[in-house]
Length: 188
Image 1 (cartoon, helix red, strand yellow):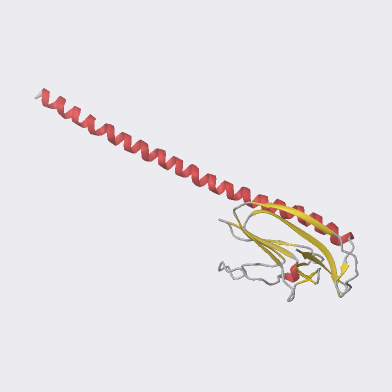
Image 2 (cartoon, rainbow, N blue to C red):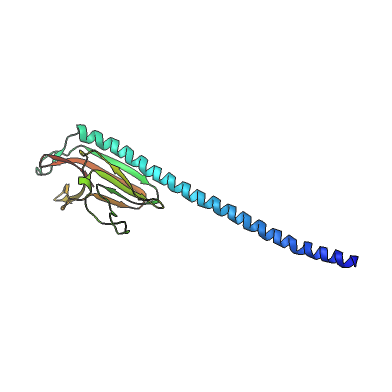
């Protein structure tokens, strides 16, 4: 009988080792999954901070331009160019959209639409995995999308904000213009 007991004990040990291995593999997979999810969340937070930093830099430059810059009269074809700022953006790939003066997804249905929000005095952006963020600006900053007509940049009619879709490197020009003695920041 002792021989059988030793055989039974050895059989139990033989099945116990593969079970330990399976449990170890499952635990390692769980740990890696938690690490991966945490890393993805952290990368999204970093992406949102990068977009916020780019917007803060732009707001500082545009505020100075609007407060003390010279504007171009849109009705005078011989008018000198207004103060301009050309900004090179490097938006993260997680950026879904950014709207200058417009909420591109005002219905929250994923369909981007042109328009104007708060007379163009805002920046709205959305980073993948987060809700959209609004940056309300001083009412003196009014963004407008520009269109080139007869070699001159003018405000696109009907007036609307400027929408960028997705991340990456892009260069935009912001020009201070006036129309009916009202100052606008033209984007092209």
